[in-house]
Image 1 (tube, rainbow, N blue to C red):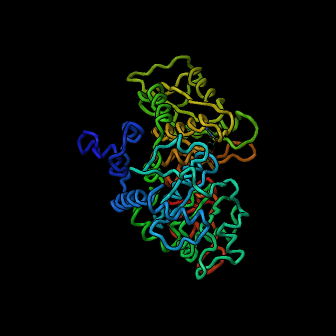
Image 2 (image 1 turned 180 degrees about the vertical axis):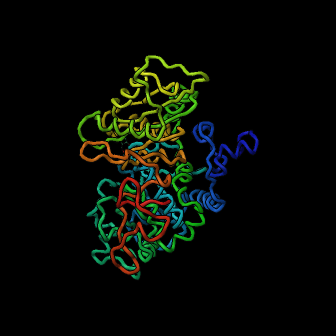
Image 3 (image 1 turned 45 degrees about the horizontal axis):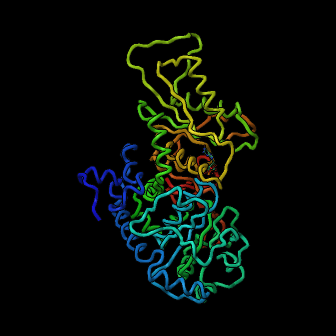
Length: 477
Ligand code: GDP
C-alpha cells in the first residue's frame, strides 16, 4: 500500500519510531496518524526485537484472522465439537468484561500472551469495543466474528465446567491426555481460585499450548506474572529491555481512538489545553459509595499538588498580585465522575491570586455521576478523558484505579499517586511519585510453581515488586 507522501523522518515520528505498521487507511482512523502531533516524543524507544515481533504477529493475524481458510477450517470443527488437533493457527479470544480502564489493561495482557504463545488475538466486541477503538492490525480484523459459535460469554465464570481450573480440579485434563473440549476457558477474574491460578505455571502453559482455542476473561493486568514464567522470561527480556515500558509501547500500539472519540479528544484539547505553558492532569477516582464531593478528598489533592509544587499557593492577604515578567498559563485538567472538586479548585484560583503570578485555568470535560459501562457515549467520554490525561505534562492519579494507570502508561509518565484515604481523612503524606509507569496487577497469584508452595511473587526478582497503592499487588519496575 502507498504510504502517505511525507518525508521518512516525519513518517517515522508519526508511527512512533516504527511501532505502528505503515499502510493503514488514515481516514478511517485519524488518531493513528495525528496522535503524535499531540504528544511529546517518547523518551522510551521500542526495541528492534519488539518491532520485528509485531510485524511477524501482523502477518500471522492476516493469515489466520476471521474468515481466512485456516480460520474456517478450525471453525467447522469447533462447531461440530470435534477434536481439532494441532493446527497452524491457534487463537485466544478476549472476552469484554468490566470497566473501560480494566478492559484496556486486560486486552494488553491478552495481546502479550498471544504474542508469546503465537496465538491470534480475537476481540469480543461486547457493547462497544468496535465503537471506541480502531483496528490495530493491517488488512485484517481483530474483532471476533458475530457468527462465532461460542458466544454466551456472560455465562463464563468461576464455576464454568470448561474452565482450565475446573478441568484440573476434576482430573479431566493433563499433559498426557490433553483437553476434553475443543476450547478451554481461562478464568482470570479477581475471584479466581488456586486451580485457575495455575495458569501462571510453566507446566500448565505446556498443557494449554495444545488447545487451539482459548477464551479468556479477566479484570487484571497480569503481565507482571508472565515475567515470572521461565519459558517466557527470556523472550520478554528481549522484547522489553526496559521492563517498565510494556504497557507504554503495547498500549500505544493497540489503542487508537475511533474517529468519534478522536473528535472528543481534539476539540477539548484545542479549546482548553493547547495553548497552555504547562498542562496538569488530576484524576480523581473516589471509592467512597456516598455521593460526595468530600472535603477530605479535596484536602488531599490540594495538599499533594501544593506540597509537590505542581500547583501554586494562593495569596489570601492581597486582592491583586502583579509580578513582573510574563505570566505563565497552567491548564489544570480535572477528570472525575463528580464536578465538586473541579469547582472548588477553579473557585480557589478565581477568588485569590496565585503567589507566583501564574494564571491557572481549571477545566473538566464531564461529570457523569456514576459508572455506566453499558452506555455508549459514557464510554466514549471515559476513553477520551483517559487519553486527554495522557497528553498532559504532569499527572496526579488516584490509588486502585486502572483509569489512571492507562493515562500514565499511554503518556509515558510517572504520576504522583494519591494514597487511598482511610477513615475519611487525607493521608499524610498525601501522595508519592510512582516507581514506574507500569500498571499494578491487583490480584496476583502467591504460588511457587516449582516447589508447589505459597510464596510472595513480589519478592522473587528485582523487577517485579509490590505496588505503591496496593500492598499485595505487583508491578514491573
Ligand atoms: P477503575 O474502576 O478506576 O479501575 O477504572 P475502569 O475504567 O475500569 O472503571 C471505571 C469506569 O467508571 C470507567 O470506565 C468509566 O465508565 C467510569 N469513570 C470512572 N471515573 C471516570 C471519570 O473520571 N470520567 C469518566 N468519564 N468516567 C469515569
